[in-house]
Length: 184
Ligand SMILES: Cc1cc2nc3c(=O)[nH]c(=O)nc-3n(C[C@H](O)[C@H](O)[C@H](O)COP(=O)(O)O)c2cc1C
Image (cartoon, rainbow, N blue to C red):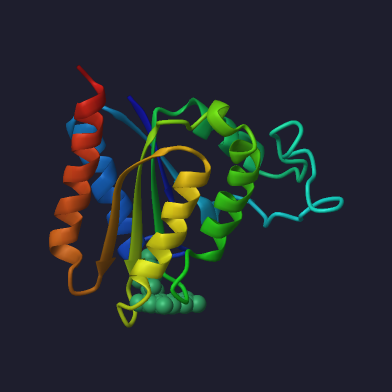
């Protein structure tokens, strides 16, 4: 099972990175293959709402804004499952996560039941390293996104500075269980 682990913090050793690392360990423990993608290392710009609101995303299910998104989109389409880890910024996903999820949603949600992610399990993690607030509103947007692309909510996990240690264990277990469920 090939799982893409997408993280979206500029910090390479912060809470988000620790959560992504825990997911990768869980995937590997179950015999899966983890492909790590750090959005902040890529050039994935925001949706430009081309033309009168819909560009090629609606008729062709491809984004016409050319940057690193195209390669990432192809990788996500081919993956069996996805882990999305975002730091909580203002009770929302980070800007890099928002750019990626917005553009992917336009291309895949417009395919409806033919979305390349239909039924694929997704684990979403909201990492709130500041006040610890905003995890739930962040997860709400992530949940709505999973619904729009017709993927399957395997788990939605909030984590903050105080819950870090036991939530890292939970993230690892969730990822391991997700892969074990898929491999007979
Ligand atoms: C612009 C901005 C907004 C933030 N808003 C929140 C917030 O709403 N709640 C919270 O707990 N932390 C907030 N934080 C703190 C981040 O969630 C915290 O730095 C988190 O650990 C980031 O993950 P990292 O350790 O991987 O960088 C914010 C940080 C930034 C830069």
